[in-house]
Image (cartoon, rainbow, N blue to C red; front, side):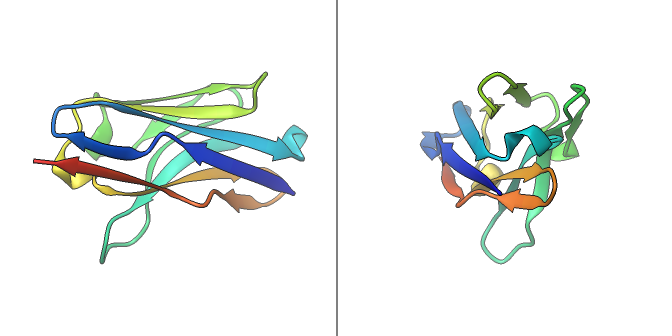
Length: 114
């Protein structure tokens, strides 16, 4: 089992920045991919970005050039630096870790006001 604790969400004005963190504990030896998804009201959950253990990064087209994903393997933590935020980035952001199974965090709200 892997447990995930997220932090860093909040309310920010358009153009602002936030950084999300997600710390993993438990069976961390099994972790391969770490990433972030988001779900806006009335919409399906979508991939924002992920990073594999070898460092390969994948981004949604909508966040390329604005968001940066990184991970600290020593701390078993993944980060999402979000810059130039837009109102359409408003959503609940979920940490996701893929190892022996697929694990999800509890979600953190990000609200971007116009």
